[in-house]
Image (cartoon, rainbow, N blue to C red):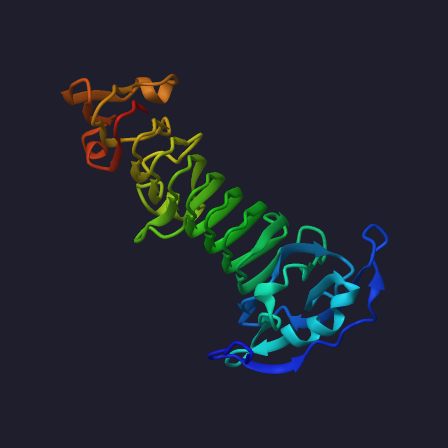
Length: 374
């Protein structure tokens, strides 16, 4: 069977492997590794896998001061039963890739071993460790674009938000979790399926998290830098709950040059799971558009105490609740119900006529209660 095709990618060279060394904790297993170096100035850095076979593994994004200030290390470690060494060479190919000018990364290419349907003893684990340089104290490493496309590779990202900034980052896998201690980015896309997404994220443009059959649990700092556009947060799953704590922030320039404290769009949807969102803080006079939905699960939303605009909380069968929380900012606002039924609460809240038409909060579920705290 031929190797998987790599559209738009060029193979620069195959991996140069170290000598296989025994695993002291796993009898008859050995490991070997290959190391690649790429410049931090690259327009795009990537890790991808293509093909099929008895492979899976882990991806780890970390940072260290042992790496040169202008380079990024990508290390691939393969652990396997020593009796499978010959077969491994025929079904696994690790190589350095390029795509267009100044775009670099690694590829994991796999194909099934001969007679794999009858041979279930073959097994190999692959670790991908990407190490970013840590430079001077209080200096943030700025990278243009980083992406993974690694089905069946669980993802772990270290606590990088205070020391690394990605203009764009995309982490994609399947059937394995994505766990992020913290990252900071302009645009971020986090995608898996049949597995959870957990983490702390800071973004000033857009953040999208997508999975299914599992939960999303995220703490998010969403900043608005552009008075003419919305900073966007999207969270989507099914058969699992969404739990989010979302802090909204505006840059100093936007708050001093505009009467509004930033523009924010938040969309969260699931099915057969609960939806819980809280907004611990937000700028005064910010423009928040929130759409939250679930089915056969409760919805519980706590808006920021500075929120002004319309609200709509609805369920098909259950109890809809909407009301004020605590705090001086809440007490200065006027709350008006246009509809105040058992399954629908609709109206607006504001401290001025202009604020009445500023934001929009719409939360819906079915066969379960919905709670909207204003």
